[in-house]
Image 1 (cartoon, rainbow, N blue to C red):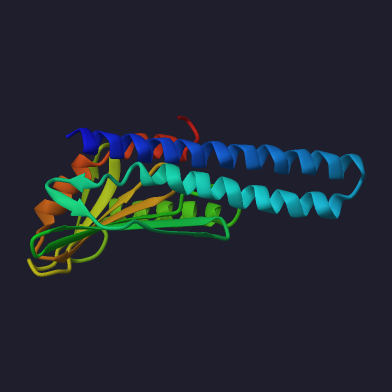
Image 2 (tube, rainbow, N blue to C red):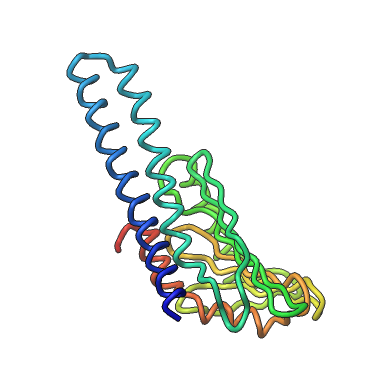
Length: 203
């Protein structure tokens, strides 16, 4: 038991060190930006701002990982896959329990830039859901957000999409051996309100 606690403490300390290092790097980058601006070297200042954005996107991605717990409804999460480009963030994690698999994906969430267009897509998806959607699609509310459920069979095919107020979309898919009711249970277990609040810049 002590070994387990020691391991957790070491991991926590390493994570804190990584975050602190990232913050120090950002401070150094912004200092360079100010120095270049003072010297009227705006080209280099813009270059440094690009590096600052990359560093902040990494911190943002790590923060989003907190909303994908290691265990959910008795399912164990596999390695989180994430990417960020052109203002878009895509994060997904597959959860397994025996032969049953469920994948949770978050699309959007970087804020600003081209990602604003995704907010438009999410709004269109929400509007379509409210107007009745497509055959085989059910519209509902999940933690106060509009969601659509497309039914598949027990082997695969069902997916639940939650349209967040921030403009991002959270998708829960049954890859194998999971039913539509399992997807609703997964959605209810996620901290969707906290996630949406963070993505809206209100946390």
